[in-house]
Image 1: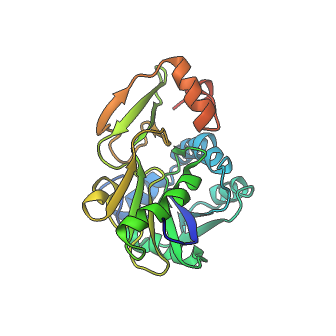
Image 2 (image 1 turned 45 degrees about the horizontal axis):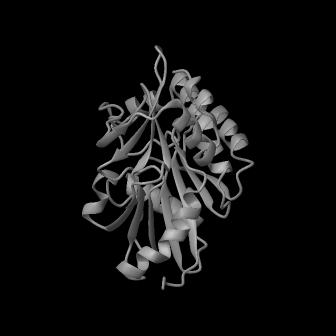
Image 3 (image 1 turned 90 degrees about the horizontal axis):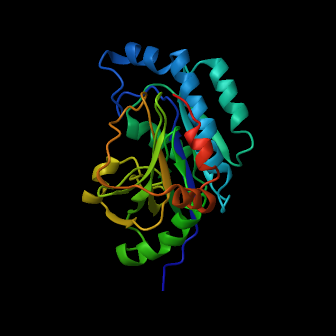
Length: 271
């Protein structure tokens, strides 16, 4: 029998946040990183993917009882901030939080603390602004949380990750959509269940190494994410595991049952 908890789900999205670490955009210091992050053409591309992938997947969750915290820099360009504000208006319990440059963990921890209203436990989930989660990601995190805590202990931070999903390579010569089963944990939709107020969060440890520090349950059977691969990826878009070449019919079925867009819509995206 699983433990009795009432978790609050908080999805944290770092939207071109100018932090002191946690990414590898440039090696030229804050000023060079600011110029790269806030480049108009780059922001236009990020918003296009956010609107095409990330936002629809959030708006289509079968369990809509979750909070979304969008972390931006305190100097995020005002016109783009207004556009972001307008875009997330239909998303219940969404907050845009602007912070000065900070270490990645400190910034995301502050964001989570500002959004926490949980009676007992918080499920902190990470999601990038150019990726998508399955329509049942929040529901699955809530369903699995009591079960994994029954094993780990109700006061022990524990991870639920999804290793089965899709990669969408977006390129001038045409897009490619294929399945992956990762051998290392992937951050998209990954959550940590922990008592509210506890220091650890989903950002405490690099997502590829999170299973070396915390007890970790992974679902490797059901597709739960779409990762976009393109020229602006900060981390190397490498598959750590097995690629699956689905037929078009199989992909259409995955799209119809797991995600709020069609294969045709994904294949029509341009760099």
